Length: 153
Image (cartoon, rainbow, N blue to C red; front, side, top):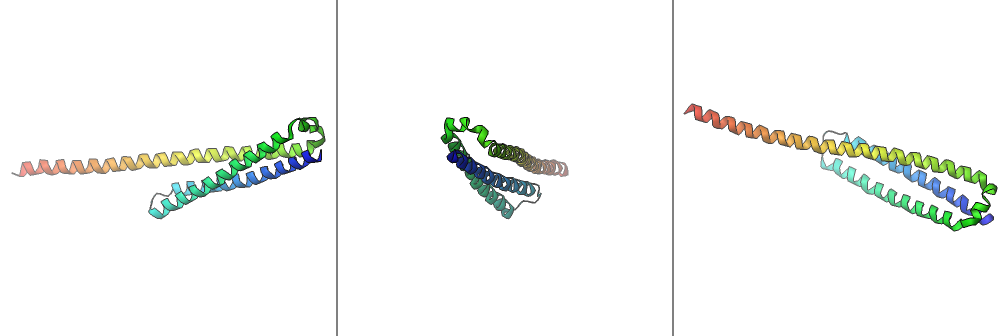
């Protein structure tokens, strides 16, 4: 019984650590959105965005480790946990609350990442449109010059 109680407490700690990591990921994603909304791009901004992406990936790797640890702890309790669930209902309730909080953070992160992805897609489309407009403008100028040369002669 004490062994299960200890494992449940460790699981609660793991969830708390995961929550803190997810909060960091959300913060990084929000900062990346700020960068994506900057209209004037330069190498420094691109480097900053990429550095944030690397940091975020490290946090994601930590989340995966926490998930594996949590699952391993849960599986290690086996049937003994089910038999003693009533005895541990207080800590189980805390676990449920933490799982809910972690799930809400996960949803927020996914929404922010989708928003950022849309910003990137829109920026890419705008760049291509602007490049196309420049090319079209140059083509039009060349045509104009050719047409006006022919009329002068």
